[in-house]
Image 1 (cartoon, rainbow, N blue to C red):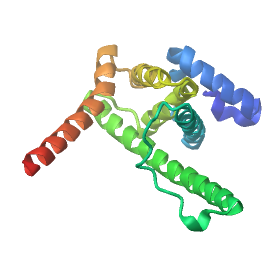
Image 2 (cartoon, rainbow, N blue to C red):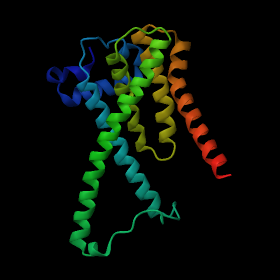
Image 3 (cartoon, rainbow, N blue to C red):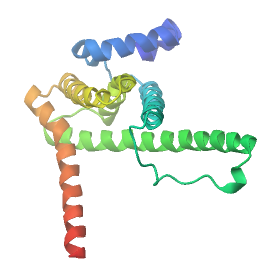
Image 4 (cartoon, rainbow, N blue to C red):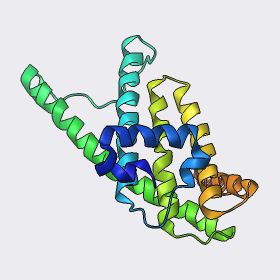
Length: 210
């Protein structure tokens, strides 16, 4: 059983750390522990926590690079209205904006997890998988630990993406008894499919303007 599903026994911090370390560094053992009796709320909250960690560090590095002049043009950002010229009002405006951002991010990230899980599960069934959607959803959620590498600027996201692909493929292989080759194809197909849709959409826009 996954450690994060045993929070009451092990305590939150211990269960959280064990789940993170096992999912990243012992994925074949970790994903082999996923069973149909596990609930989906624990992995969901686990993924959301790492989603917010990613958001915080992404925001931090954006501000950092802006401060050192790495970004030369931020003209596309909305200007603060003159009615917020007072210091206290600006502080309240920023706090309110952050709260709204956190709420919107939580909603969008939840939808992203469900959508990605549904797409992957569809391809898993197509390639012979027979497990319930809950398995696929847990795989997606428990790969979210890779978001910790957002602490690293620039190259962190390359690590996140490549490690996420690897963990997802391993998770599909272990939980659905699908070959390594098929698992890799299943992981890559959704992104190829989405890329083709985007390319087609862009081409149609360009040809329409022409």
